[in-house]
Length: 330
Image: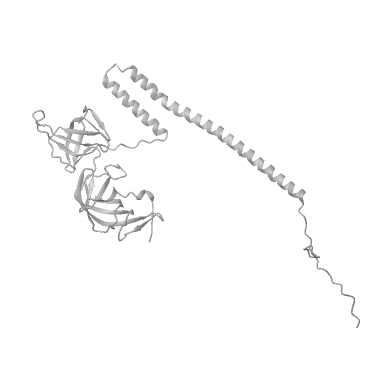
């Protein structure tokens, strides 16, 4: 039997390419040209940035020089007037004092023109901490009122009012551990002696007559709750303002500050630890408090647990959240 001799086989292509597909090699000439163009643009951008920086530095130096010249020109008259005051220092003392006051007013006006408005100073706020009556042979009639000046200043001869009674009198003497003073300023611990024998006790406030705060027994406040136990409407607490402590009731929870959404949640049922809330407070005795926006020292207070004496909240008199213009969540 005759076998076929045609047993030839076709080997498959091993070059990994299809017959009708060709791979195009990248054009190295075009790529190099593109890279060169990008590098050129990058270098131009760096040069432009460097020129901008140099131009900005020159403009800044020019503005600084102009501002220095403007401020110097504004203050030169003050310096001239001070030199005139020193030249007449040996003349009538009252004339020198009047001249210095005029220079001060001039300086305040210059600061205002330069954009630094002067806020009106708060008058004297002096919480009475101790009533000193030694009743010794050396000081048989000594009656002083010791404490630290919370705001303003006080001078011998100033007219003051005692709050909450409303009695008016005059400062006759200012004593310190280092001797007597003619004037004392904020933060100084002093003992005030008054011209009249008025009824004053610890917790009262001696204030300037011109802007004395009105004693209040019901007011709006902003508090940060610091206790684990939630705050609820009707809570009976102690309120410490300055050196005075009185009973207080939380009348309402007006709005809770939502720090996540920067908004107010009206009428919350309770206030948890570290939350900030606007409340209404009723005190058993009126307190001579300023709004916190007017004065921080006389506008702040603490809420205290009447049983344990722990501090439950730090409070600010007034609506401290109002300047934030927060929206209310419905």
